[in-house]
Image 1 (tube, protein in one colour):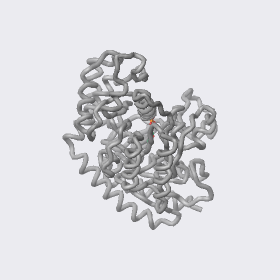
Image 2: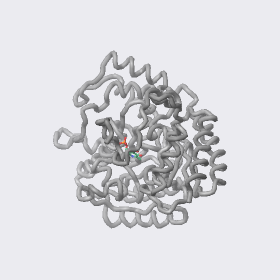
Image 3: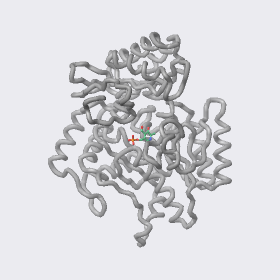
Image 4: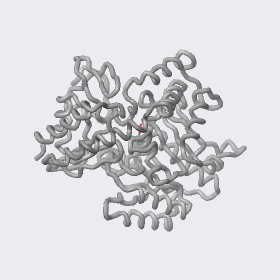
Amino acid sequence: MSASPVWHPFTQHGLETPIPLVTRGEGATLWTDDGRRIVDGISSWWVTTHGHNHPRIVRAIAEQAAKLDQIIFAGWTHEPAEMLARALVELMPRPLDHVFFSDSGSTSVEVALKMALGYWIGRGEPRHRIVVMEHSYHGDTVGTMSVGARGVFNQSYAPLLFDVDRIPFPAEGREQATLARLEALCRESTPAALIVEPLILGAGGMLIYPAWVLAEMRRICTHHGVLLIADEVMTGWGRTGTLLACEQAQVVPDVLCLSKGLTGGAIPLAVTIATPEIFAAHYSTDRARMLYHSSSYTANPIACAAANANLAIWREEPVAERIISLAQRQDEHLQMLRSVPGVTGARRIGTIVALEVEARDEGYLAAIGPRLLAAFTARDLLLRPLGNTVYVMPPYCIDDADLARLHDGIAQAVGELAS
Ligand SMILES: Cc1ncc(COP(=O)(O)O)c(C=O)c1O
């Protein structure tokens, strides 16, 4: 048993795997207490966009902390939140113009689901069924597990999860089956909303599908008056090459969830952004019809200040160029990975590269997963395979040498371990 009282997330303490102690971060680099320099190949769970400890975000946090640390957000407001909401509305596609704050990707999705149900109640025609995509992941709260894939992540809690309708993942050549199922569900079970991760399913295995399928799903939802919720918690802030993945399909959702890179990855914050119709459905003189959601730290001023600094970085630094450059460099490494024996399905979207390692078993609990993880950690690489799926999703500031270290490390580890 470890001497530490800390109970870590997604960690089986019974395996007694050593847990490195990280003391400092800068750019794409982390340092441990024993002096190791680690390359962050997954942006510390997909959050860090411009690099760790970006000076402008660090300064904004320090300055705001000295002015106003926290204030209840029900019935009160503050400038960092007002400024951020205005800037987000400016940046996001029309007509997304009402910004609801929360503090994690999961809560942004919970709020989106509540908004969708509230919308239908406000219209006087209650609907409560949600359509979801096979292999999706939307978080670990009970509501978000309900709309996610059922499996090892949540099987212990299955009795608590609510029932949803599922459409198959639009794998290559099977896109029409997805669209036909969506069409049928929209016609037959009058759902409140479809929730999707646009263009790439993250925790479900970095599964990529084409923009035209997203556009078609939007068309079907619009045709049947079903709301479209885009969970851009992972894909938002440039990961797929554009600010939002939805842009590549020229799709505007009715509800948009953002978190992770909203503060550049420095501090927790999330937003759920909705159209005027959804806001209007909750707008009333009747207090029973308000959106019943909050958490103590809703729109925390320090987090909002960090997000404002992040938006300033997007406006004033060559972020788009960095993303294009990273995508190109990722592509070059992808060619190399394709030639590594034991690697299959190597793919890329924007700044994200993913592949499968040939193994006896597949899925999140694939036996090769912990062995790959150990091989990466031994090479001072922060990479965290999803079973036999390995992916690289670094901060946009990563330099050539560190990116090469990640990919060479993957090639070496696969060479050692692939069956
Ligand atoms: C698409 C998506 N939605 C929601 C979440 C949940 O976000 P959080 O872990 O901040 O609650 C994640 C987390 O990885 C995600 O990838």
